[in-house]
Length: 175
Image (cartoon, rainbow, N blue to C red; front, side):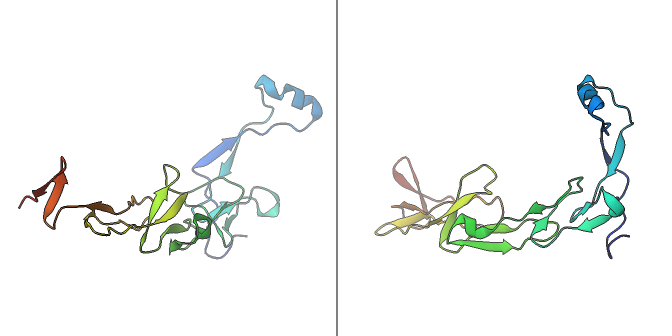
């Protein structure tokens, strides 16, 4: 019986897994590369759900429980746990909540920027934007929203508005 609103698990595309005999003598032969039974396809669950493969519910899609998700069609037995923004520190904020089909998206509060710890920026620290006391701002602190946003601290300089610094000198901005 399928859950309301979810289809029966499709049987294509399917990921095939070997079904190995369960007797102890066959376990010793398992590494020979021979299988007694043919490969059986496991149906792929649509995004936001998983498929049961065992018992009476085998082949029926189930929605991911609250706090978990799958963003793509999958053959996993369980859904992935959602991140929590507070693991990024006190100044982290939620841009979008976790749903059955997407993970939570975290960023930093205004006045802070993301300093990425890894290439995907899934782990980051929120750093306070510095102020330019006694000098002009060449580039303001950037706090762009988004999962892979590139943020940067304030860059202070000595050039007046409509001028840029190059080679230690201030040059007028092109028209």
